[in-house]
Image (cartoon, rainbow, N blue to C red; front, side):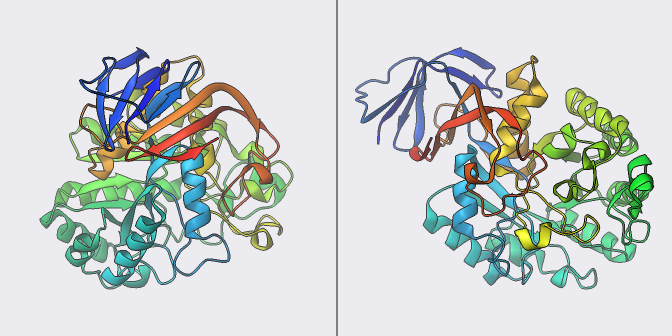
Length: 422
C-alpha cells in the first residue's frame, strides 16, 4: 500500500529532521521525505496537520504476561495497548511462567505475536534456568530462537560466581546482559524507599545502598569480562553517578529508567496508595531529580514504560501486601512529553525511539529512506484523562489514574500498515 502522511511536523532524531515535511511510504518502507517519489500514487492519505510524525516508539520493558499469567493480561490486550500508545517495537522480560529459558517457549511467543500483526516483539531470554540463579541457560540456542538479550528480570542472582560465568559466556558470543541492580538481602521484604515516608507509614524499607552495592558488583564484573551490560531501571542518585563514572571510563554500558520514576517520588505514596508500589521503589525527590539530570546529560540512555499489568485483586490490598507494578505502554509517550516540557522534543523522542533501538541492536527508531515504515503520529497538544475505560491494557493500575496527560496518539503504522487509528 502507498501511503502519504502530509502536513505534519516530522521529527527524526537520527537524521536531524524537525520540520514540516510529507512522508511517503511504499510497500512498507519509507520511500521519500519531502519530495513525491517518481510514479507515486497514494492509496491512502493521512492529513497530519497540527500533528507530529515520528518514528514508532520502542519500549525496553513491557510484560505481556504470556505464557502463564493470562488472568492478568493477554497478548491480544497488551498488543492493542502497545499500538494505542504508539509503540511499534517492544522487549518483553523473561519472567513469565514458565520463564523464557527454552527455545520452544521463545519461538511460540514470537509466533503468537507475529500472527497478531501489530507491534514487533523481541523476547529477552532468561539468564539462568527458571530464573533461579543457579544453572545458566543455553544462551546460544535462545539467541537462535529470537532472544535479543539475557536477563534475570526482577529475580535475584545472589551467587556472584554464577553472574561472572554468565557474563563470560555472554561476552564470548557478544550477547547483551540486562540486569536490574538490587542486593536481595538488603532489599528483603522491603516495599518502599528507606526514607521519611516509609518511616512515617511504618513500611518495610529498601535502602538506596541495595542498588549501589549490586550495581558496583555488576560494573566490576563487566570490567573483567568485557560483556555488553545494560542496567535496567536505575532509581537512585548514587546509581546514576556510578553509571556516569563507568561510562567515562569507557565501559560498554547502557542504562534505562522507568517513566514512572522520572516523575514520581516516595511522597506520591501519600496514604498507602498501592498504585505507587513499584519495583524498584519510588525514591526521594533528590533521586528523582538526579534521574532527570542523567537523562539530560546522556548518562541514562532510554526511558521505558516498565509495563507490568496487575489484576485488581492483587493491587487492591494494603500497600505492603499489594503486588508491585503498573500499566505503562499507553503512558510512555505522554510521560516522555511531560518530561520534555518546553525542551527539545527531538532529543526527548530519541529516548524512546533511536536510543532503545541501539540498545536492542535494531535498525529501527528512525525514518531513513528505505527503512521499515514504523511510524507514530500524535497530537502533542491534546489532553486526555487517565481512567480505566481509556486504557486498552487489561491492567488498569497506574499512579497517574485520574490525572490528565498531554499527548494523544492518532495513528500507529507498523511496516507501512495502519494498525491503530484514534
